[in-house]
Image (cartoon, rainbow, N blue to C red; front, side, top):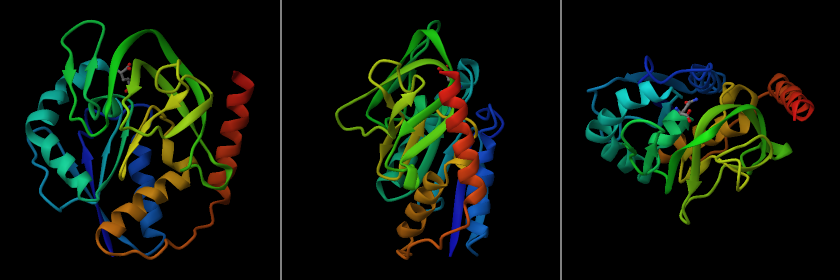
Length: 245
Ligand code: GLN
């Protein structure tokens, strides 16, 4: 079995340790004997049909979002949508998440068109949401929780066709109004949770890997890993989040 990760704009969209998500996907595949390759997809690089099983895009400030938005729309967007509809997985964080919606309207400057993987849109908020987040989520493993760290001013609103990743019990999440956090569409997961997300949320990592493998016809359940350390890290993050809110 082989998984190929398409790492979108690694030099431009990679803040608050988001690269750690790619390292986690690679490790959790290799620990299971699954071969995994990572392709960097930079501005101008095309997305080839059927080549990638998981797409990843990290967060970035407004400046970097402007730098990648045009390429995402003009070079990669249509193909990424097609791949996700065809069963590919994706994990997009914060600024990357915003550009996978329908649009991102920053405070100053042009509205940035998104590629519309998620039926969602983002507008700039006056208050910056910074802090730990805990959310109840179906992808949160046995505890049913996902944890992370948020740092964004954008407020994302989900359309009817969009399922949240979870419902926050601590922190702002999508918009600090409706308690939703993130978005899920088929195998694509968008979230505001930096941290990076996956080391402390193995359930989300394995969801992405399972989706990637099932697209290639490998429908077997993933071999369970010893997640003692990961779950201990998640518990510590939950305790810290509860203390700081
Ligand atoms: N520029 C976006 C915001 O502030 C995203 C920031 C990020 O990726 N952390 O909402």
